[in-house]
Length: 277
Image (cartoon, rainbow, N blue to C red):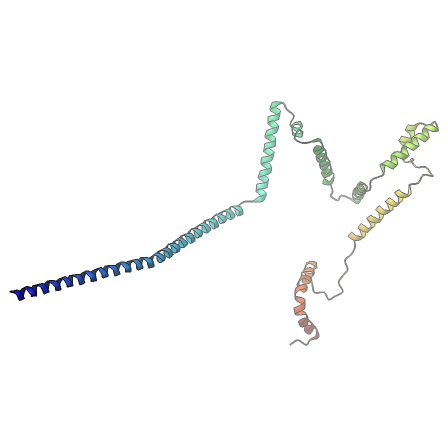
């Protein structure tokens, strides 16, 4: 019996050792699995972050493409609408609308018993009104500028030149006062002197203009001659070979020559000499 008890003890010890070994192996397996999971999580974390970034980038690109497409569509629609519109027609409609508003304002002023023109002048200063009237007078003067006959053309030219070459009114008034004083001293009627200024017998035999007036007239005449020669001057005909058919073509050839003559000069010279291949 005692030997049998010894075998049981050995068997129990061996069993405990096997259990401890299994526990150790299981613990080590758990620890290795845990470390593996931690390593996998550490590896998956950057990958997940990169994936999120790529997804966000794709979303931004999609939004950008959508915005660009919407903007292009909006621009196309605006351009199409502008192509259908007529600027002249819009300006005409705006003028009609303005005229209609003026007519409505006039009717309202008449119903209230007010003067529409006077009411409009309240919006402007006296200086602005004077400038506007002067502008309208010049516009009316320039309205009839068409050619009818040579006499009228000469008269218009004279009026234009006289508007630029104005008389010296200060010198005229000074001479007028001197003539009136001289008439009073001689016991004559001053009204005869004033009336004579608008008649054909205003100049005496010994009366002559001053040197400044003569120089002024000479300078103005010289200026008119220079303008006439400049405007009626014939253009010099070119002495080179004519390679153009009209003035527009000549100017175009000059522009082309400035850029390409340095490349084509040798070819043209060879063609003129007849030595080109």
